[in-house]
Amino acid sequence: MSFAFFPDTPEFLTPPSRARVEQSITPNKRGRVFWQGTSWFARFQEDCPKTIFSGESVMVRGIEGNTLLVMPIESSTSN
Image 1 (spheres, one colour):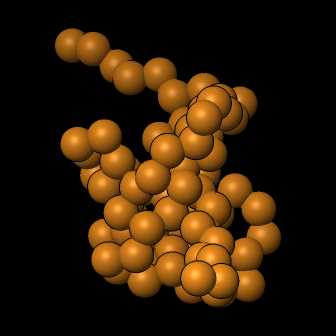
Image 2 (cartoon, rainbow, N blue to C red):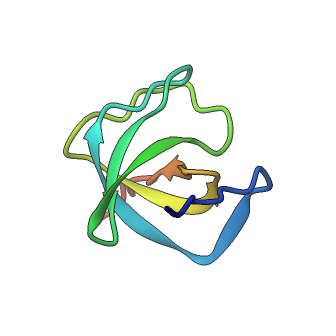
């Protein structure tokens, strides 16, 4: 039998990478994202006042235990 070890200290990714939201992420509740071929729990890395809905993309900034730390992707309004 093997056990997975998930450290409590966040590991930050350089550079961050994109993931697709599968289950909405809210300011107070983690959701799920599809990243590198696998479904992961995800929560905001920093306070974020909005909800990111299923089908949208986020940037994965790090990993803490079995949860990805994500940030919304800022959309550009200029053309």
